[in-house]
Image: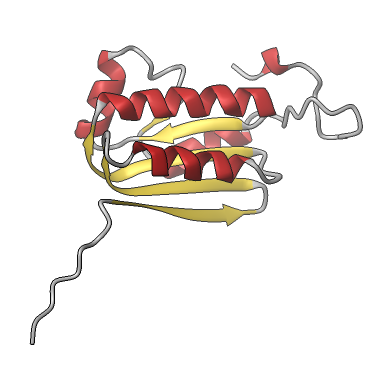
Length: 142
Protein backbone atom coordinates (compact mmCIF):
# COMPACT_ATOMS: atom_id res chain seq x y z
CA UNK A 1 0.00 0.00 0.00
CA UNK A 2 1.41 3.37 -1.06
CA UNK A 3 0.24 6.43 0.77
CA UNK A 4 0.95 9.98 -0.36
CA UNK A 5 1.92 12.37 2.36
CA UNK A 6 1.65 16.06 1.63
CA UNK A 7 4.93 17.85 2.31
CA UNK A 8 4.95 21.44 3.55
CA UNK A 9 5.55 24.05 0.88
CA UNK A 10 8.20 25.76 2.94
CA UNK A 11 10.38 25.04 5.90
CA UNK A 12 12.69 27.34 7.80
CA UNK A 13 15.70 25.68 9.41
CA UNK A 14 17.15 27.72 12.26
CA UNK A 15 20.85 27.40 13.04
CA UNK A 16 22.29 29.23 16.03
CA UNK A 17 26.01 29.75 16.57
CA UNK A 18 26.98 31.96 19.52
CA UNK A 19 24.87 35.12 19.07
CA UNK A 20 24.22 34.70 15.33
CA UNK A 21 21.06 33.09 14.00
CA UNK A 22 20.97 31.75 10.46
CA UNK A 23 17.48 31.09 9.11
CA UNK A 24 17.67 28.81 6.07
CA UNK A 25 14.49 28.91 4.00
CA UNK A 26 13.67 25.78 1.99
CA UNK A 27 10.89 25.86 -0.60
CA UNK A 28 8.88 28.71 -2.08
CA UNK A 29 8.30 32.21 -0.76
CA UNK A 30 4.87 33.30 -1.91
CA UNK A 31 1.41 34.28 -0.65
CA UNK A 32 0.83 30.80 0.75
CA UNK A 33 4.03 30.67 2.80
CA UNK A 34 5.05 34.20 3.73
CA UNK A 35 3.27 34.31 7.11
CA UNK A 36 5.06 31.21 8.38
CA UNK A 37 8.40 32.56 7.16
CA UNK A 38 7.83 36.00 8.67
CA UNK A 39 6.71 34.52 11.99
CA UNK A 40 9.79 32.31 12.15
CA UNK A 41 12.14 35.20 11.33
CA UNK A 42 10.52 37.38 13.99
CA UNK A 43 10.82 34.53 16.51
CA UNK A 44 14.52 34.25 15.66
CA UNK A 45 14.95 37.88 16.68
CA UNK A 46 13.02 37.51 19.94
CA UNK A 47 15.99 35.97 21.75
CA UNK A 48 19.37 37.47 22.45
CA UNK A 49 20.67 37.24 18.89
CA UNK A 50 23.09 39.94 17.83
CA UNK A 51 22.65 39.09 14.15
CA UNK A 52 20.25 37.40 11.78
CA UNK A 53 21.23 35.96 8.41
CA UNK A 54 18.40 34.87 6.14
CA UNK A 55 19.71 32.24 3.72
CA UNK A 56 17.54 31.92 0.61
CA UNK A 57 19.81 29.62 -1.42
CA UNK A 58 17.31 26.76 -1.29
CA UNK A 59 14.32 28.85 -2.40
CA UNK A 60 12.71 27.81 -5.68
CA UNK A 61 10.14 30.57 -6.17
CA UNK A 62 10.55 34.04 -4.70
CA UNK A 63 7.54 36.30 -5.11
CA UNK A 64 7.24 40.00 -4.39
CA UNK A 65 5.79 39.17 -0.98
CA UNK A 66 9.22 37.73 -0.16
CA UNK A 67 10.82 41.14 -0.61
CA UNK A 68 8.15 42.66 1.63
CA UNK A 69 8.87 40.04 4.33
CA UNK A 70 12.61 40.74 4.13
CA UNK A 71 12.09 44.50 4.36
CA UNK A 72 9.76 44.07 7.33
CA UNK A 73 12.30 41.78 9.00
CA UNK A 74 15.12 44.24 8.33
CA UNK A 75 13.04 47.04 9.88
CA UNK A 76 12.35 44.94 12.98
CA UNK A 77 16.03 43.98 13.22
CA UNK A 78 16.97 47.66 13.14
CA UNK A 79 14.47 48.41 15.93
CA UNK A 80 16.02 45.67 18.06
CA UNK A 81 19.63 46.54 17.21
CA UNK A 82 20.17 43.23 15.42
CA UNK A 83 22.53 43.11 12.47
CA UNK A 84 20.91 41.68 9.35
CA UNK A 85 21.97 40.19 6.02
CA UNK A 86 20.41 38.09 3.27
CA UNK A 87 22.04 35.29 1.27
CA UNK A 88 20.79 34.93 -2.30
CA UNK A 89 23.17 33.20 -4.66
CA UNK A 90 20.39 31.95 -6.92
CA UNK A 91 19.20 34.18 -9.74
CA UNK A 92 15.54 33.43 -8.96
CA UNK A 93 15.94 35.24 -5.63
CA UNK A 94 18.71 37.77 -6.30
CA UNK A 95 17.16 39.14 -9.49
CA UNK A 96 13.87 40.40 -7.97
CA UNK A 97 15.81 41.96 -5.10
CA UNK A 98 18.10 43.77 -7.53
CA UNK A 99 15.22 44.80 -9.80
CA UNK A 100 13.55 46.50 -6.84
CA UNK A 101 16.88 48.12 -5.88
CA UNK A 102 16.71 46.76 -2.34
CA UNK A 103 20.00 44.80 -2.40
CA UNK A 104 21.88 47.35 -0.28
CA UNK A 105 19.07 47.78 2.20
CA UNK A 106 18.82 44.01 2.62
CA UNK A 107 22.63 43.62 2.70
CA UNK A 108 22.43 41.04 -0.05
CA UNK A 109 25.35 38.59 -0.21
CA UNK A 110 26.07 35.70 -2.59
CA UNK A 111 27.13 33.18 0.07
CA UNK A 112 26.48 32.48 3.73
CA UNK A 113 30.18 32.98 4.44
CA UNK A 114 30.06 36.47 2.90
CA UNK A 115 26.97 37.35 4.95
CA UNK A 116 28.58 36.14 8.18
CA UNK A 117 31.71 38.16 7.40
CA UNK A 118 29.64 41.30 6.78
CA UNK A 119 27.68 41.07 10.02
CA UNK A 120 30.80 40.32 12.09
CA UNK A 121 32.45 43.55 10.93
CA UNK A 122 30.15 45.68 13.03
CA UNK A 123 29.64 45.85 16.81
CA UNK A 124 26.29 45.06 18.34
CA UNK A 125 23.74 47.83 18.79
CA UNK A 126 21.26 46.92 21.50
CA UNK A 127 19.92 50.28 22.63
CA UNK A 128 20.33 49.20 26.26
CA UNK A 129 22.48 51.32 28.52
CA UNK A 130 23.49 48.34 30.65
CA UNK A 131 24.92 46.39 27.67
CA UNK A 132 28.72 46.82 27.50
CA UNK A 133 28.79 45.58 23.89
CA UNK A 134 26.47 48.35 22.71
CA UNK A 135 28.23 51.07 20.72
CA UNK A 136 25.33 53.39 21.42
CA UNK A 137 24.25 54.67 18.03
CA UNK A 138 22.34 52.72 15.39
CA UNK A 139 23.69 54.99 12.65
CA UNK A 140 27.07 53.27 12.94
CA UNK A 141 25.69 50.20 11.18
CA UNK A 142 25.54 50.98 7.46
